[in-house]
Image (cartoon, rainbow, N blue to C red; front, side, top):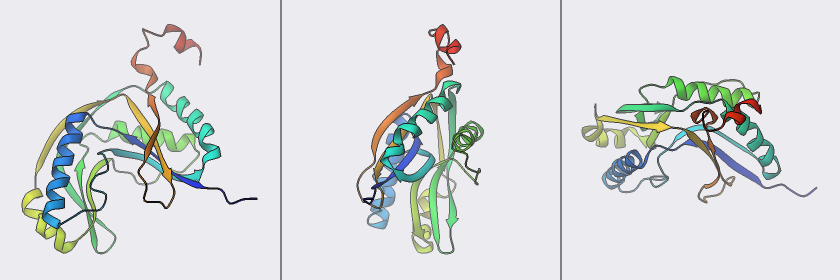
Amino acid sequence: MEHEVLYDYMLVIHPDAQTVQDVSMFRHLISEELGGLPGAFTQAHISLFRSEFPERYEADFIGMLERVVMDQSAFTVYTSRIDHCKQGESKHMLYVNVANPKPVEDLHRKILQTFELRANSYKPHITLARAISHQQMNQLSPYFSNKMFVRSFHCHSFSLLKKPAGGAGKYEVVREFLFGKDHPSDHPLFNHAA
């Protein structure tokens, strides 16, 4: 049997254009201050799930996700500030917090249940910079210490992205999944066809 190519699949919530733009601005600021930043130019997102598997499972994966979104309602995501946490012993991550994590956590849990995976500790956030050293963190501190980032955006879908596993390529969008409960009045049949 030939060796199957694994793909790195990721499910993400994309914020609205304004939040994406504001996050990019902060990432550029960090990048300039630190003289470069790996991953600074991936578009702002809230990660829901990530896994590697062969492409032949993709259609099943999509089918399962379509069932997840059928009875999912839209919600609003609120952010309030820029925060940081430790990653392992010596690294830090700088991120935008989600001030009302529950709807995102519930969606994350639903996705894991669909794939029969155990829930793990999960904290929704928008990454600004990861794997930065103590020294870099101190360097950024004057800019980001207690920095407010008050935004809100409507979440009515998530996207499935993929790229070849282990590669440095960019993620491409496979499909966007729109939440089914948003327009029940437009689709009376849709609700009964379950």
